Every structure is written in C-alpha cells, then in structure tokens.
Length: 155
Image: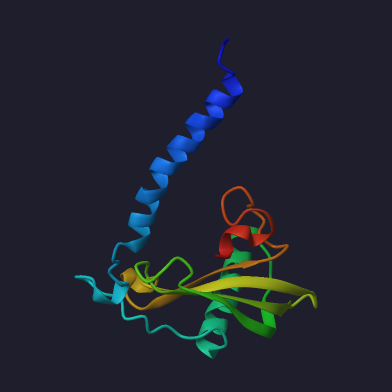
C-alpha cells in the first residue's frame, strides 16, 4: 500500500509547526531594550495629537507640498475630531511615535481625513520631533508615498 501524499504533507507540516513554535515563544520572552535606555537614547517626550505646534506643522508642510509639487494654493484652514490612533504600536524598542487622525477642512471648503504621526528624531538633523502626514484624496503620487487611502501613514 502506497502512502497518501496529502496525509504525509499534513503530518510533516504539523511536525514542523511543533518544532518552530517553541522558538517563536522563546523570542517573545526575550528582553528588549526600550528606546529611552539605548546608548544614544530617545526621551519619548513628543507633543500630543492636539498640540497646536503639531497641527501647525502639518498645515505648513501640506501648504508647502501643494505649492511646490502640485502648483496648488490649497491649505488646511481648520481641524476637528482629532484623535490618537496609536502610541508606539510596535513596542518600546522602536523610536517613539504617536499616530493620529483628524478631519481637516481645506481652503476649497472640502473636509478630508488626515492621518499623521508625530515622531521623535524627525527634526532638523535628527534632533527633536517631526511629523509625517497624508491627506486622504490628495495623496497624488500614490505609488511613491502613502499608497491607496493613505494606508502607509497609519500604524
């Protein structure tokens, strides 16, 4: 009687899964070094989603990008429904970043969702904090920036 190839493959797969699982569990228990305790540490002290300086920086960078790359005079005139969507979603060993979303009204009167993040180490020459953002419907270079519906701007 010949062995059933499907059953043989299933048994082999289960055996491999059993051998891999302990290795994964072991790595999950390993200690991590928080970003604040590194040789060149981060301090984790970055402004919140509703901080006026964060919102102003998003608005300023948005206006600059629109003017420089798209020959557009579009600006962000106001924000509402500002919310934090994640804080350090990948763990303490990654540099501190806060993910946020809001609804922005642009100068053409249209309300658009904005996904943005405040990240330590994005300031001038890596000092301080900076922002990255994507305005839904205005991510015109989809293939190079944040992909469809600003997916890459979120955690």
